Length: 106
Image (cartoon, rainbow, N blue to C red):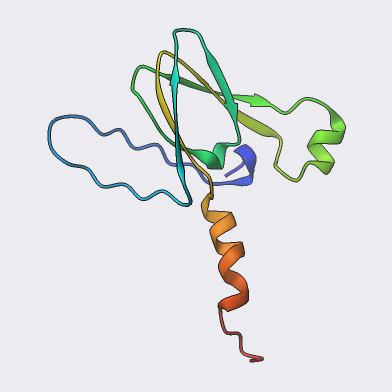
């Protein structure tokens, strides 16, 4: 995907029962008050309450855009509600595993 250099899928889950989700690394929970904003790298957003609003903003500054290595966009989540972030998005997991994957040269 274009936003932040990563694909992004948003799945809405509601109702009673149990749902299983897989997040990578540790999960950090934030409780946002009404109007409070959290600016994050898109790959770290794991889940959020339905009461939260999500938007995309461009990264300010040419130096950040071209030397930051994180892409041109950030995700902005506005409360009220809970936000759960994952500390190791899938590109980081893949990079951490790469040295242990056999190649044709090994």
